[in-house]
Length: 293
Image (cartoon, rainbow, N blue to C red):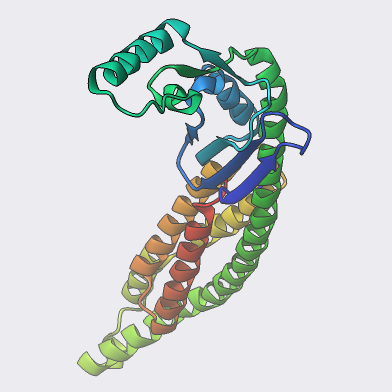
């Protein structure tokens, strides 16, 4: 499974809903699963339930979840009248009128504007009913997020497979060159010795021994075989049902190690140039793999 760790998902309550929730989720790449939730304070007690739903379906990524409440039902709030406090305000206003002989403009509107005379209180909600609605929206947002991650992941997979094919082509070219490196070394060694001494004095056994030592040091057969194996592993990994990002990251590290070894052993200019191209492709794959779950 090659899902990307980048995505976005949204879910909105139906029009007939009395609570009117909007849930938005966005995710980016991360080494582990990091969940951050911003939601109304009166619903914080169900935050762990939301985390549980996310953990059940997503394994890696930095997940930011934003939950807002857009509308409220008619029964969500109640308005009450503080009679004792209103009586005290009325008594004070009456004394002011009598003592200062001012125009009497005491009204209901005036009294109701004083602090705490009219009190608006939010009714206690049944959190289970809230969760019934919210959990459906969370699952819907996760599904939308997952679908986007899946689509993006498929694009990453195709790009990585294409780059693996390019790497395989370079490996084949290096493999062809590796046989010529030893032959070229033998030719140059013989020419150099011929310049320094009479050809009749050349010790063929010594030359053969030197060439054998060089061939052993310069051999990159094992590295090329492992590179081919790693490419097969990458393609096979994409068929697995579990998240594969960490496994791919490990394989890429091994491929980079093999490429560095080939580069250190290569003396042929063409092989060196091919190795540089090889390492460039491996690095591009590594960058892509960082975003796979």
